[in-house]
Image (cartoon, rainbow, N blue to C red):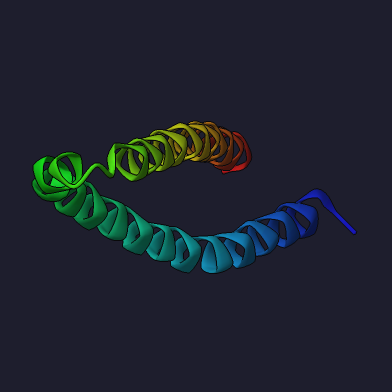
Length: 94
């Protein structure tokens, strides 16, 4: 197998990975939408929850959003680094 065939196989493998990856990131975008909606609902309901003595539930909701934000940042950081590596590899072999 010559170098061009190897490069072609690598590009085909990268393409297959991206074909699987892009729909997954679109799916992750849906979770962002749900988190945004939950954040708005929680913000709007906060005064009522406090009046009803449900401050603990409010605190749990806030902690859940903080956890989501932490995980989201980690995922986005990995995504960014992965895209940089794919781009660097693609430039190197073309």
